[in-house]
Length: 469
Image (cartoon, rainbow, N blue to C red; front, side, top):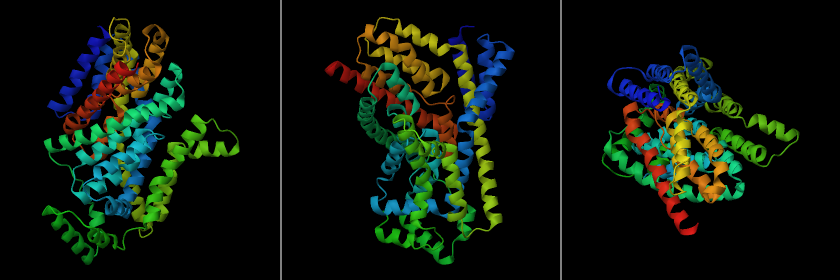
């Protein structure tokens, strides 16, 4: 069967199994991957190999990071560190702009850090924002996810835009500048989008854990009840309310709470800038290259969480926290890796390349070529990085004959490589599971957002290209 037809049938099967039956997402993803491989003519052996290879590659890239991130997040939640940070920030910026602050945190973090790792690191903070402000995770988690998503695709030194800049011969500094300029209106569009879409679906607000509630004294429960009653009346919390909440002596110190979160981000950031971009060498660079790997950086944060955040926990309680975190991580890791299986099967059938080359060979406005190539390479196989790297290899020899500015072409390819994030994308499952979204809700909100934001970016680039180039 034609690989494109096989892909469309497989995706339709996946949507049917997840949305209209009781199939668990892991099983649905594996079944759909097997169906696509067999329909496209890979044969039983090659289909199984493609499924297991895609599963293993995804496990290799983010499996350990997700496990460690769940442990870190559980310690930050149970120790009260996430609550301490959220209260401290909300005291300064107020409740109305909580979604913007969380989104901006993701926007900045994802420049050096993979969006998957960034969401894992920051998700516990987002959940605490949601609890304190009574704003749905559709808004808070959606803005965190999109803030991370936008700069991950548009601003080096993340691998995708870095590869595009190199293949198209664009100065790296110029690409970073152009990517940031385009990212700003996309972030603003995301704020409007998620504030709108948040009103169309039932709110999702994480509940406080039994362990956290049990640790509260009668006086602390009274304060919390009074604050929540005020919020239920529609009144906004004041500085005095936050001061009262921050008096909670069960919470860890503010400095160590923020350091536990920021140290892995800073280590990964420094490694990306100094090692990947500036090519620094020497003994210190070797140490930083090791410490800045996401697995090592988040491991450091986990150790800090165990000994500095959970000082009031017994050894048995700390072990129980780790085991509970790893139990919740198991489902996330397996579903995410199954998404990698689906993407790898589609990649091997070459459906994306077939569509992209047909578009590149057609006669259409030159700006549309990189826009459509990015979309057609991303949609089938789920990996934005693969779409950007593959798309740059296809388009680089054509740039001179197309007569398009390399910077505009690069930004166009990176923008539409975002389009869309759904069930064959590992990041879809990270956002879905760590935010507590049902799959249907994630498709209605997050996936629609990843249609809307690249569309806005494409319109901006078409206008800029028409006016200036």
